[in-house]
Image 1 (tube, rainbow, N blue to C red):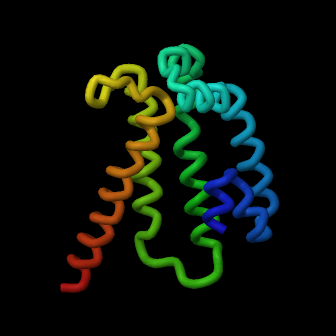
Image 2: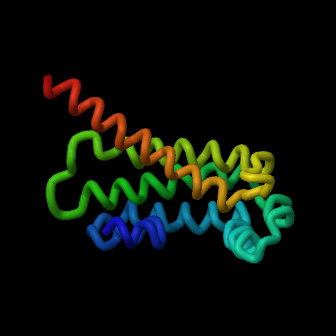
Length: 146
């Protein structure tokens, strides 16, 4: 179910038979995608035209995307069959936070002299988000085990 939510927020919920939240997430995904010009920005970024991608991005809308995206993934993950591990939401939350910060600074931060823009910097920002989330899980579990 998680993989379907990675493909398109809301699909995992629909497969989990949570139709209302699935439809709401799908409609939010479409709205934020259109309002932020995300598909055009993705195409421009992959074509290497980062400066045009930055110009075309509606940052006021794009900043909603990480939270929507990671909430949809976490919600599908927690409702899938099997037990949900304690504190498993932390990597999702911190990834959304770091990705949002990546969106905010995507028009300014360069890596090795290359402007990564509104697609690649936020995607790279997921890595520290996951690391912080999993590290916190480890710390919390270690501190409660003793």
